[in-house]
Image 1 (cartoon, rainbow, N blue to C red):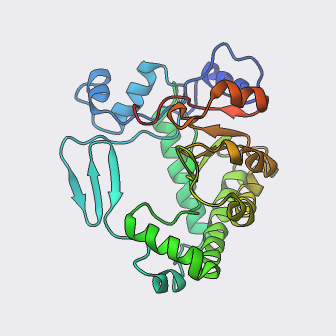
Image 2 (image 1 turned 180 degrees about the vertical axis):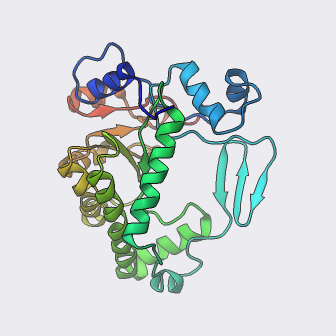
Length: 286
């Protein structure tokens, strides 16, 4: 395959992004279901089976499918079980570890070469029936384990400056990555995953988010905005009280609009007429 997406699929997606009357609403989804893979592509190994499944199911766009495993797999500190992957090592074991955090990154040229290779590989995999629309994260929340959250909470009250330094280092790297995406026009839209909410509202004080999260998010997406690339913000939970702030920095759409968290699709559309809406499937049941 050439990696070129079917013209009809691409037109459907682009028209939807621009509110330009597509023939139907495009389906944008990521699969992680072994039964589906085996039904759609019996005997085919991952990830090719996922691409075949996307095509057979009429999925127009994906940010990449995930492997499903029958038995728990442990590789170092990474655990893969059923439809969940997690790390058993905390991002930060102590406040001192957070204070000492200084990441080691590849030079920009090496990063650019790797990103271009990864994007081309993903596009080649899913074409021609499914469009690859990538997702990323810049790391406002440093980890999803209890110990890291404990350190994060301690830093919020004891050393916010250490967290601010961590955030700035993350933004520096993410902005470089987004500049590469923008320079090569790798995608018409990108999803940035930063979870900020529980089912009943924001995890953190909205005033803190307005001071520390949204200005940094604006720096991350700035290269994309200049290139005309649209940004979907993914956050689980109820983010209704944060949508004005998100739109103010240039967010074009949101995902997943979880109804079990009180995200009302109709209410969001009435209030935000030009916001791209993705999802509206209960995250606890999908």
